[in-house]
Length: 134
Image (cartoon, rainbow, N blue to C red; front, top):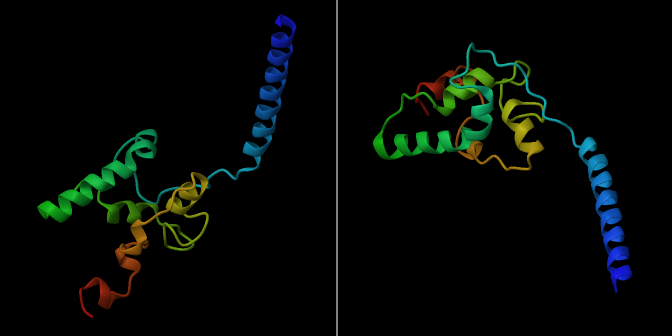
C-alpha cells in the first residue's frame, strides 16, 4: 500500500510539473499589451494604482455624475480619453494597440464604456456635435 501511494505521489508530481511547463509555454505566446505613451503630463495617480482601480474609480465617478450632477472631477472618463488617445487613430479603443483596447484584450475583459461614450477626445468629434447641435 505504501508503494502505491509513493508511485501515485511521483505520478502527481510529474503531471504537475508537465502541466506547469506547458502553461509557461502558452503564457509566452500571449501578446503583451502595447501601451502608447500618454499625450498629457502626469497622470492623476500612479500607474500601478490606476491599473488596479480604474474601473472602480470610473464607476464611482459615473455614480456622482448621474445621481449628483457632479461633472468636473479628478477621474472623469473624458479626461482619460483626452490624455490617452492614440496619436495615429485618435482613439483609445479603435485599434488593438490603443490604450484601453490593448489591456482589455490582454485580460479578456469586454469594454462596455464606448457603447455610449465617445472613444475619441471631444476636439476630434465633428464641431457641430461637440457644441450640442444636431
